Image 1 (cartoon, rainbow, N blue to C red):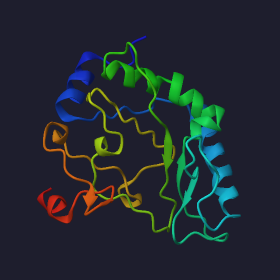
Image 2 (cartoon, one colour):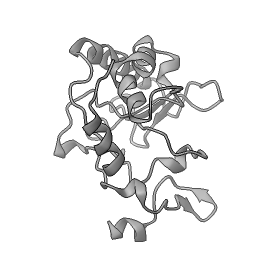
Image 3 (cartoon, rainbow, N blue to C red):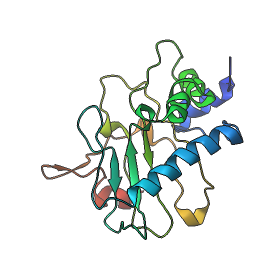
Length: 191
């Protein structure tokens, strides 16, 4: 089943991104929101990262301003391992079909899933970065699919992209011998 047209694939290949609105139904989004709201509520009981993924990392990462009265859950690692709604979305939703179309469809695999959260009035920031250094591969037929499950406005920190930057330099995300997850200030100032 085709979800997008060739012109969308061409835009993705040229610009490095594609925005497709209304991919999931209101019911599908509500199921994802419900699971996330439960995780936020659960996070109130913790004061440091908690839970464990299959590879031993903390499943729930909280920001430094987190408290029971002011939850600041910033990331849920591998939500598809613990939530049927997130698993279904990652493996068999219309968004997964679109991702497969963008890279040719056959043999498409899920590498990982996560929820990045910027709850209102929290310190969470995501600085300028490129996704590839986080999951380096020997091939570049990868798609990072983002689904916004709440309203995105200019005031609440929407994703920003640099069209065509996927064809340019792959910048270092290291600060000395520490992986920082961001490009250096000198690179950010260029853009």
